[in-house]
Image (tube, rainbow, N blue to C red):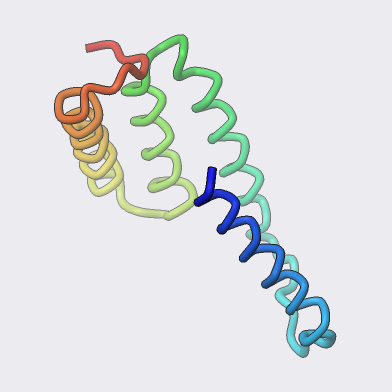
Length: 107
């Protein structure tokens, strides 16, 4: 419990400092047409969290990574497919085989 307390205290201290010392922001970031990407990212994470207990982590993670790479990142089909498959396989090796975590998985 000490580490979360330290992180929370630092966050509160930084927020108070920003409140008092950064009263005027000269060039705030404007909302543009690319703001839809934030909504897609949040919705995809919610779908990932909802599907993981039902399907395991492999299929939802593969779909999430592909969506983020292809749609949000505008990567090529080949790059999106290879990185999504490679990352999912790497996470499987790390979390299931290496660390032996008890997260839902298919294989």
